[in-house]
Amino acid sequence: MKRIAIDMDEVIADALGKFIKLYNRDYSVPLDLKIEAGNEIYHHVPQEVNQKWFEYINEPGFFRDMEVIPDSQRVIKALQEKYDVYIVSAAMEFRNSLVDKYDWMAEHFPFIDWQHIMFCGNKIVEVDILIDRIKNFVGFKGRPLLFTSPHNLLITQYERVNTWEEVAGLLL
Amino acid sequence: MKRIAIDMDEVIADALGKFIKLYNRDYSVPLDLKIEAGNEIYHHVPQEVNQKWFEYINEPGFFRDMEVIPDSQRVIKALQEKYDVYIVSAAMEFRNSLVDKYDWMAEHFPFIDWQHIMFCGNKIVEVDILIDRIKNFVGFKGRPLLFTSPHNLLITQYERVNTWEEVAGLLL
Image 1 (tube, chains in turn yellow, blue):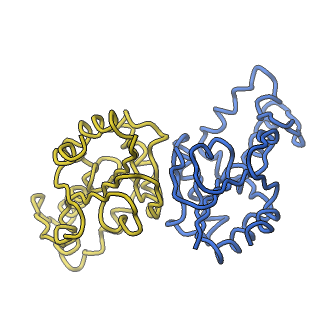
Image 2 (cartoon, rainbow over the protein chains, first blue to last red):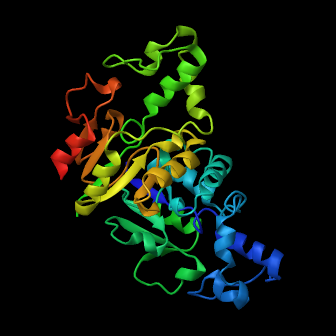
Image 3 (cartoon, each protein chain N blue to C red):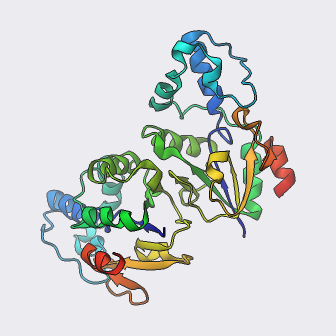
């Protein structure tokens, strides 16, 4: 059985949407803000608070109530029939994210057991397929699938998936 | 640079000592209890509380104040000169261990950055050497080094290290 590792933020959990909500609450950034291709959230908020995202992300609770990326639950459940599926998040950068991410997984992906969840820094995982963002592909020897997010829209050197429906089409 | 992954409990953190302290506090189990070869702590405590270890291990704080295994800090710091060193713990089994283990690492191993710490279930890590207990060697293709703990004393099929001094002698 081939192994797949799947990232959390911007792949199964809508971190960007959470940032927009908080910038909306505190600085009236519009909730329907569209991030331009290649940009991060901090390119689209008032300059004097464009580093505020770092405070947000370190707050307990930031990772606890994110929306689930559409279709990810259904497709990942189906993937488990054919693959050994791991969720691998570079959570170690943010101390307060650990328990939030653990609880978020238990709520939204209860069919993924603790043996298949990994919080790490560098993703030195032995897997065949990695669905992730670009920085985690460095040194990866398997098949990388770049899951589309505004910040990576200008990247062309990786096989890209725009939605979980597309992942299903490729892997199921 | 070769990669090493090092387990936490019974390898760099004295989990067994912590269990003995708690059983001593609550049930007068002697602090100098010697665990017989092949046994776990629950073989050596009153039968009516031999599953109490599972409550202890799930309590917040259990993993926070463990003693450091002798010489592990000094030897691991020296290993970092020659190897890419990761700490890889199967912490995901115990929700409340996550932040405790994170803080414990920051206190006792501040020279290991977040990129090199991993909390997981199955250890599907791509490393050359794994210093760990037996169950994590299953499927591992590199060089396993079994770090001695009472429960694994009867195991003979792996290369064994009894102390961090011995690790230094082998790898430095």
